[in-house]
Image (cartoon, rainbow over all chains, first blue to last red; front, side):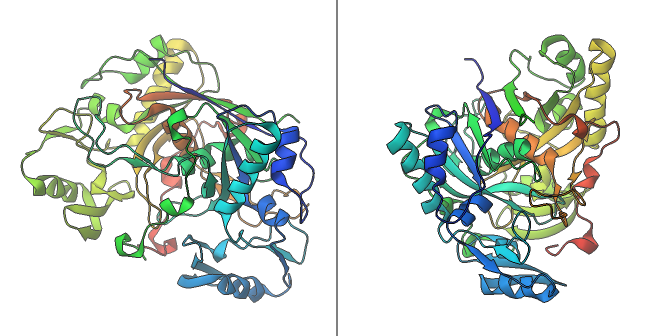
Length: 234
Length: 234
């Protein structure tokens, strides 16, 4: 069997996204999509398209923290103006994902209310307009416990599994794998970030060549949110 | 400027790796490498090549935990036979990275003693034999706090940055980015995992097309280990 190969590339030429823009319509028209592609869309343009932009006093260092706290259901840690919070979605991240970069001075971008719904909307538009079955992942840039540096992860998905369960499959030695649930949505988001960069204005990337068995009608990023009872660090 | 694109593919036809095998020599001979490629090598074959395999009683459920504890400098959490430990390298992971899958019954594979050195050895062999400048990442499969599912991360690197510091660069709005240090080594490891699978016997992947500015002579995965004083969750 030939091992699979992936091609990961950014989508060029998208306009600046404003409230009310349909990212799905734009991608159906402009992105060189093929069936089975997974499109990774950065959270920021999704939030902007959904009007999730609020005013914040850029001169008040505590304003962002207060905004972050208002978007949280729980505060895990504080250090100076940084808060590590749990969002309504169940994500644990810095400042509830509230972001001041790549947005007009005096504004802040909040996470989408329901990123899975955002992903489904993009998928449905591409299917309706272009007749293509694709997967969609909404990505954001998160820090991690214990490891320095940020990585992009999935905060919403549609048409592609969040986690692929390899439990019960057989490894290369013929031994049954005990527990190998890979978070392929996070890995796809990470791969996409490598061609986006933070300053390059490439808010959408296409990942071509993912295992077709990972594409599925029903998927939700809630699969990734570790329940409190199973979480050793919350 | 054309956005970059990445090609990610597995290396076929590698033999089973035994103690004493030189992965770098094998790759120089068999892998279709080009200058600037980043080669991602899974920890397991690196450990096997370095003889980091020990006997463990497969019928004793506590044996793996004891082995994991013996490989740890600190135990963060316990649940049943699972321990979350800090390894001598500073990694926080399940069972100190001790692994029983893809290895002969009654054996366990330990992490390499110095995965950066392992990566340098592979890089130096490819340079000496094939005359190619490449990056090398040693990857392993780790769980995360708060997020279900496993992802591959970097545990060693050579010739490619672990973290790329975008601090001080300007974002798309002309605003100076405050802190965007991306852990590109982890993102590259994650991208590679997507073509490896856990059961597919593809222990090496090539990531072609990474930003040339990320390739550098001096790099170390220690960049990724968050110092205790800066860590909010240890």
